[in-house]
Amino acid sequence: MAQPFVMLFAIIVGALVLVWGVYEIKQLIDLSGDIQLSDTMNDFQRVVDQYYYFNEGSARKYKINLPSNFDKICFYSHNPADGGWNHPPDTNLDKHKPFIINRENDNVFIIPISEGSAFNIINLKPIEGGNNPLCFRSGEKINITTENNYVGVSEI
Image (cartoon, rainbow, N blue to C red):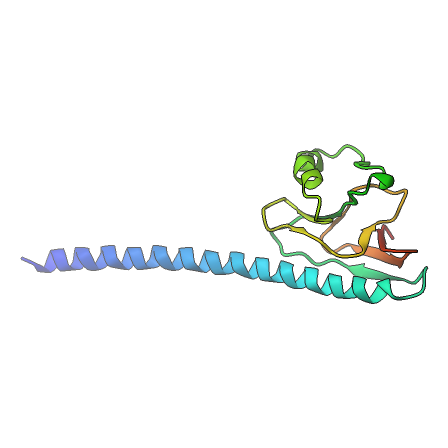
């Protein structure tokens, strides 16, 4: 008589273990994306640091690889001398404008915006006179150029 209850209990426990396992795997996948993004930004900071000390006009192409859950990377200069927000209308980007403008210590933003998708890459900003913010899709190549007192990012 007790055997059906034992089987029912075993099925319930098995289902709970399965649900917990799926949840943990999803958490690990999300964490791996965050780690990949952090590694990408650290590599990019190293390249910027290297080019900052090169002669003015030194340039190279750099491919941005973002985790699959991110669409774009945007570079923004908060310096009023750079003209502030100067970007063609883009509904996907415009909805993030308040977040980008209010994060004054960050100059690189990963779209879609989340709390961990804003970074400060020292000595980096979009080339003066271009779009601000300047955005690229994951996998696109960007041009990194040593300018007078900063490293500029521009389209190829």
